[in-house]
Amino acid sequence: MTYIRSFLNIVALPLILLFIWFLATLGEASFFVPTPQLLVETFINTWTADRFVGDVFPSLGRLIAGIALSILIGIVGGLLIGSFRWLRALLEPTLEFFRAIPPTVLIPVLMLLIGIGDEMKVSVIVLGAVWPILLNTIEGVRSMDEVLADTSRTYGMTKINSIRYLILPSAMPQIMAGIRQSLSIALILMVISEMFASTEGLGFAIVQFQRSFAIPEMWSGIVLLGLIGVVLSFIFQLAERWILGWYHGLREIEQSA
Image (cartoon, rainbow, N blue to C red; front, side, top):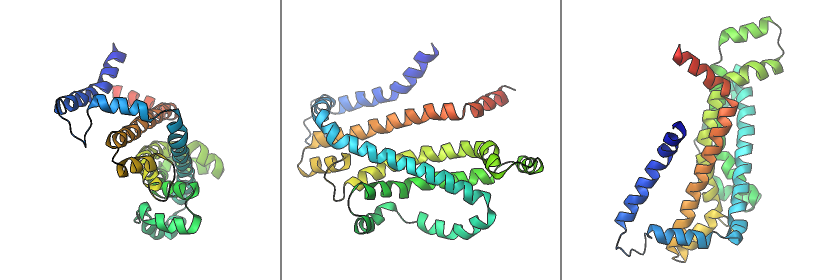
């Protein structure tokens, strides 16, 4: 019964929105907004095996690479900056400067410096997606219980063991919150980066559909991006439950006490 209720909670709103969309387009023949039936047919016909190999797979590869690099850079950099007060004081003005620059503005600069290949597109993703992870990691490290820090020093724990067994687990809830925020940013920047001087990818395909007035195909690309976002969210939730199982268990105990 619990699983049925959870499933209904997930699909209820999408079904309601689809029903409203169906009613709004019933008997209409708008060139710019396809009916649900037409969109489903177009989606099936457009995103075939060839289109997946030519456009979807390259985009997913860049997205995964950008997210992975953002997580690596954000966690390592956040642990270092958060652990050393002098380093945080030294880098904070510079970090605030670069954080204020929209990654999309840097696309022409990156095109001149590293070309128009995958390196540029992955760099754009990293430049935008790394900040939530980096900043949340820094705050997670800074918010660690001082008693735990003093205890680790008293017992002579090495810095590596302290990071592994105390600092990283303590900061992990905020790190996961930063990763969740970075997923949507990475997906947006993946599409935008592929709209500049690209010959394949989801962003390129959607722009091509728009320029050739293939409106249903354009909408089908937008729907596919939404589905990718949903899949990413579910994968993240599974990973979060596994990584933070101890944290959620502790919160349940505290709430039931």
